[in-house]
Image 1 (tube, protein in one colour):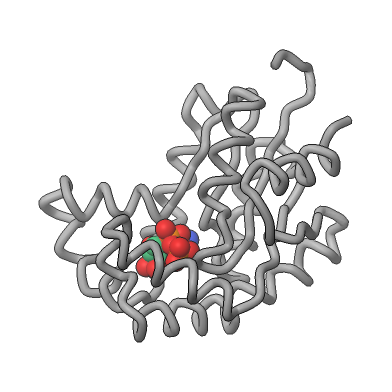
Image 2 (cartoon, rainbow, N blue to C red):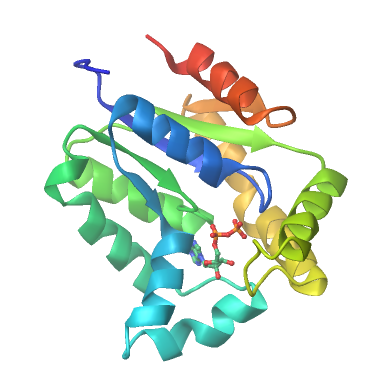
Length: 194
Ligand code: ADP
């Protein structure tokens, strides 16, 4: 799709809400990069001999990596050439301090945010989805039931307050994340098409 509009989008949603899948579809639709901090950290864990060991226990426990390391990684990534036409952030920001850091990064680069898409899915469904994924062997090492519950709690305490943060800025778009992948994608596109 070619367009002069530069979409700079944040995806908010608890673990299992399908935000990675939806971010991916949207990234292909608009031909803009999908930046998943979770994926970056999993890759760091596997391949970075220096940083990998530092984040191993944090990821395994479902806790948040330090804001300093996270913000540094995202800031560098946003300065890459391929972000010039827009980008989709998935998994960042994850708390108010990260949101404030992102605001200063974007302000420095004179890049206004377009939307913050919040995917909403009831908690029972989230747990079912993630544990289902794990039992099919498609899960991740942090998909154990206790860790999943902890990740959901971390989301509630630290990330959910960002809905109000972005609502106050006028950027929030709330989407019901129940239903087929393509139906949810359609609902998102209806809200963000010019
Ligand atoms: P989830 O499906 O739980 O939302 P993600 O793939 O987004 O998972 O993230 C996996 C893990 O990576 C998180 O539990 C956390 O340890 C780390 N992580 C991802 N994004 C961030 C972030 N913005 N700040 C700190 N830690 C993060």
